[in-house]
Length: 366
Figure 1 (tube, rainbow, N blue to C red):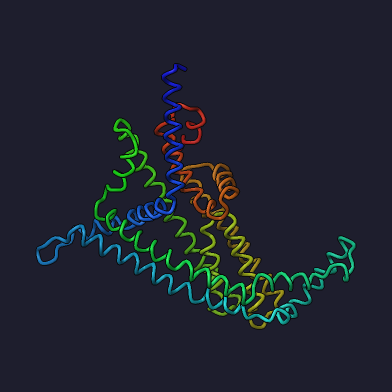
Figure 2 (cartoon, rainbow, N blue to C red):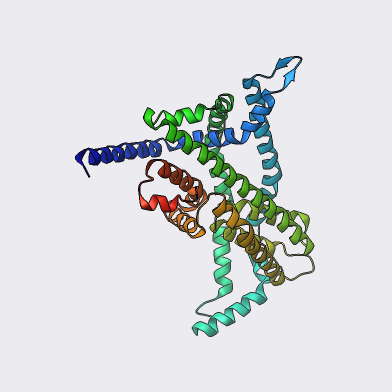
């Protein structure tokens, strides 16, 4: 390698490090811009269709089309919140007011069996370890009025931030919708002019892949919500509780791997608190756990390979490792953003570092 090449790479690394630092330092603003860009991608087709309409021989302006589209998206989001939040909040309030002694009595028989199994396996006696007391202590520490009030207080403190985010995202989204190439132009401005074609191709590829991914995962979550709700109702669960289970699993399914596990635990515990009428608490927990296991298993083998692998054109093991690394670095948020960010990195790597064998291997399907 020549000194000029080494200098070029060092400058590139320094510029990249500076950009990464600025993105981290202004992360909240960057998130607003990225969310607005995603909303603009979703609302773009509606803006284009509205812009072709004529009212009294006058064509609808791009600004009016953008405003109507933005209002429509927020209206849909508000309707979803009205539909989803009430049952979730109601369940949280129910859990906060629970009589844990009564709950433990309902599952006394399974607890006794579990106690006997543990005592036989580890050779411990009842005075040394009580599964019932341990469960009661854990439940009281996690779900009590103080915990829920603390959560509600935190939500109240976050209202101002949410309002600021709402207006910021709305403002940015409006201009992204009105000026179709504005976001692309902003990104291109970060690169030298000689790389304009590379950046343009990368952005178009990223747009296609991410639209496919997000539409796919939202469709998957909606299907899971409907299927789980119907299955729970067929087993005799009330429509309210069945819908709660379906919503929890559908929403948590957006988080790869860890989300369904957390959703399953919440659903089983909710079933213990409100068992199916005419069915014991233990059988209710088994019904919920087994049903979710079967449905999620079918989802993992039928839907997810298409979403996580084919839609972003990456090997399933590759996706799993990326999610695992992102989760270890940034927890649940990292797992949620792992696939979109990895998709962006791969596409840009293909455009600018295609001479490296590793990059060629990772991007051969793009």
